[in-house]
Length: 298
Image (cartoon, rainbow, N blue to C red; front, side, top):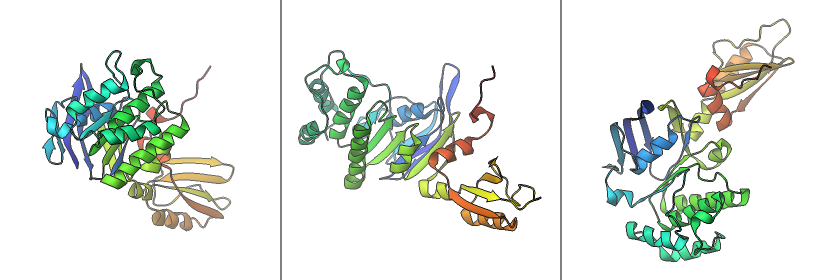
């Protein structure tokens, strides 16, 4: 579905993207993960055709997306910073969208009124941030797109509406094989909905995998070593090591089988192999002083 090859993008001396490549299969729910300023929003703007990369290739279904109105009519993009015309109501924006998106479904738009508690005749700019976000979803779900691009999609929404929106999006994935690319800092929610993950840092793609494969590549080992033994696992280099009393915790970039072999070789008093959450993988994969939690020295 999406094939991005070595794109770069700079703004006023700042390199937002640098030789980044990304691949998303049709029907996938792909999570973009990275720290603030990593280039996630820039990537989504380029992928939506709003911005043009300085170099590289962006293809959606084998077609370039920039200045391709027929292809862009199949893409729904909800940015983090929403924009609506001054004084425009939801009905005004509906008519505007209908002029650009031939797949706009009037009947679906009417059915979504049962989900979103918004007065469609009220100026959208007079709504709260959360209600404006709901208005964006109401409009974009009615487009019946083949590709959803979502930048911090549920930020500012209450827990009930967050669950409702994820249910609607996943329903579209199941019903029509819609492809979804999501940029979010809420890794716990991404872990629930995504089947593919890409980790971006300083405009570069560090890794991209199926989520199940990514979770198989990282493990946590908790181990109690025999007395007088050094707290070291043989033949593995940990990403992180900490201890609480006699219990040592190692974060390893390897499979569970290799971790278990290393733990058993120590003849430990006790050990356990645990999976990592997506948030833990993100923290330990980035690693280094730039991402360590720092304390304020007074």
